[in-house]
Image 1 (cartoon, one colour):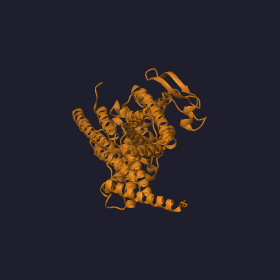
Image 2 (tube, one colour):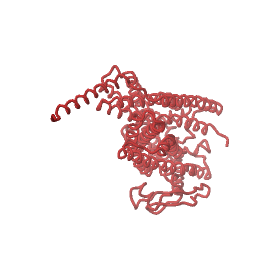
Image 3 (cartoon, helix red, strand yellow):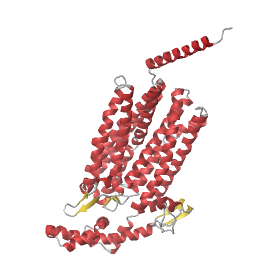
Image 4 (cartoon, helix red, strand yellow):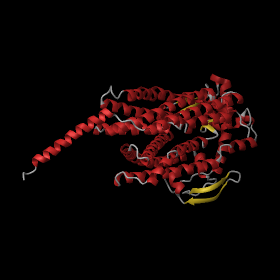
Length: 536
């Protein structure tokens, strides 16, 4: 298949986004785990916890630096490759990105330096405060990015201005508290916590298999398992919440994920497995779980979930309504201040469907010139390719339940078996390290691929969002980014493996002071016991 400017621009953004998200989950999770470890150190004053904080903090720092380097490129792409998108919705989309830069990024950048260089310059409590501010900054950064992305999935708090031909924000707090954005935030950060927990357990298991840094590794497994178990459970619960919100805001995505072509009587079943056939509009060999989809999607036994075919019919109706809005818009634009009340009333009545008329721009320059065949084709375009969504979602869910089982097992061994772990379990933990990254990338694939053909759902088609660039220009920058990001990834992996093999360094002076202090305490207790014994 020959790739055009739209497909190449999508491929470039997908590549940079997925590279960037190799670093984000570990940053989110490790920042919290490091802060927890330092909290235990401040409370107990035991050097082993300081050693753990420094070691895992070093790996966090390497990952953080690469995450920043890859994230900056993504934001520049909005102006380079998606200039019409930036013009059309920049008033809304730009606000959370600006807040993220001013509030979260500078918070992270400032306190990361204090965290690494302030050990001997700050008090224990002050340094602990810095550690938690780094963690809060990392998570705040994710919040604002996901508010922006959530608005693309569910564009609330904004309306189209026919005079400026742009979307404009009408309610910032509606954008901020968008149900899709909030569900995506808690689901994404919880996935990051699972990623870091699996990473900590896997690296610690590698040490235990080789008999190195055993005390640090055992304690790290204990912290990672407890934190990871809570996080893995929350990922599943919050993923369920994302499915519920999709029932309201992205019905087509939900139907495509389920391979549900026809509307079922409530409550709808969940297709556990099957073979979606987009040409036949049928899912072959489906194994269903009765009622499950109805309960997940509607929280009831009486509410229907529309199938793909009914949603295509609704899209066709909205395209026709959008054509009326487009005709009224042309009249309003031509008359400007002298626009007739009738034209304005017609536009306002149908303005919610204007984006559907833009789907026709793929086939014809003026949507009003579209034929019946083109209208039907545009309605069918609202269906994303079903089979990759169907299987990506199920693999992601399977990995999620696998994380719950793994975390539960290590939590049980750490809590009730004296932190003794069988070697097969340790080998499994090492091999499992890449799994949460695979699950996270699958999650983003489902979220973004499932939104097609929209950049902003129901408002702006992807085909209209791109910049006026040539195929050659985008191809060259795509290749450049692939090479550059691959080099960065190799550097990051090299640094991480180098310091993992090297292992944690021991703070000799503090360890000796702690051992001396506790030897004195133990000696004092033995002397007290000896003097209290009755004379023979």
